[in-house]
Image (cartoon, rainbow, N blue to C red; front, side, top):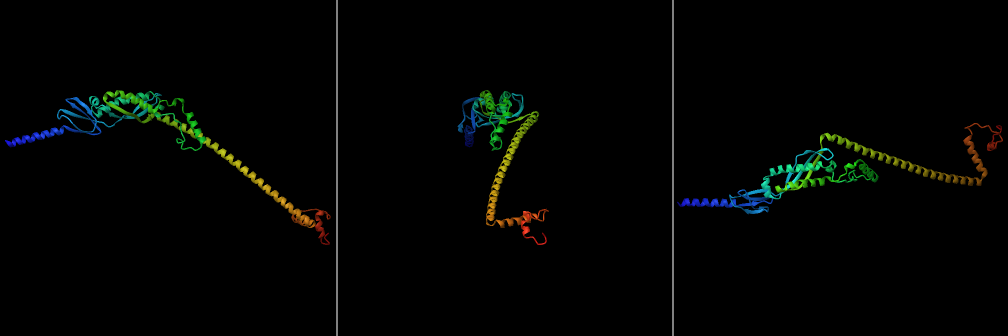
Amino acid sequence: MQANKFIVIVAVLIAAGVVALSAIYTVDETEQVVITQFGRVVGEPITEPGLNFRIPLIQRINVFPKNIQAWDGDPGQIPTGDKTYIWVDSFSRWRIVDPVAYMRTVTDIQSALSRLDDIINPAVRNVITSHQLIETVRTSNREMTALDHGNIEDEAMQQALEELEREQRPAQYAVDVGRQRMTRMMLEDAQPKLNHLGIELIDIKIKRLNYVQEVRNSVYNRMIAERNQMAEKIRSMGEGEARKIDGDRERDLLEIQSEAYAVSEEIKGRADAEATRIYAEAYSLDSEFYSFMKSLDVYKSSLGKSQLVLSTDSRFLEYLNDFAIPGLE
């Protein structure tokens, strides 16, 4: 009889221990808990991490994530305001800010993602279809810089490229809104529809944009034509610069040759003057001897190379007559 009482007491103690342990639960820093009793919410949500207690078997623990969650939309074809069809792939980040409302309307992550699909996708589509393609692609009307052109050092070349960019950009391509403001508009459109779900959208971003296949070829051809036009502009500027360099080279060469010719003529003039001075000094020392030597030079250079018919009393033969051989006169 006593053994049976002991067994009963042990069983009761074990059951009490199990019940006591089931009354204790912990909340992680990435979790938030809502306590329900017979399907009704009891107390305030528990959002701080730590050890907590509940009434076993009566109260139920409902755990929801507190950290940021990801939503990744399915890429879809959307027409822009200028009737250009593009593929848009968007994503978003969200979190649960009201776990009680979340539990009553959504209950789990998969249901929440499904509701986000129904709300975010139309918001993205509405904003994109209300604006031109350039608004979705660009953020501002920023001009191209030297970094965009490969660090072009020639200032004139850089200015010409910037002017060409402005000429090729039609007026309807001016950015008034831009992608950043468009994503904020998507967020402002979607958030009011999620408030009753206890969900806060942190951000909506466009992951990827692309033309549909039938538009890509025409776009690529236009891009090629624009780049060819820019390349032709650069080549013509380069040819003009080359002609300018050749002209400067020819001018510098003529200047150098002219200066060299002037220096050479000056040297020749000084040399001729010096030679004349030496000849004059030599002539003043002995004019007869100087005349004799010069005549010999003339004889040497002229006689024997040409035929001359001269009179015997010619002054040209003066010195020959002085040394004439008798019998040959």
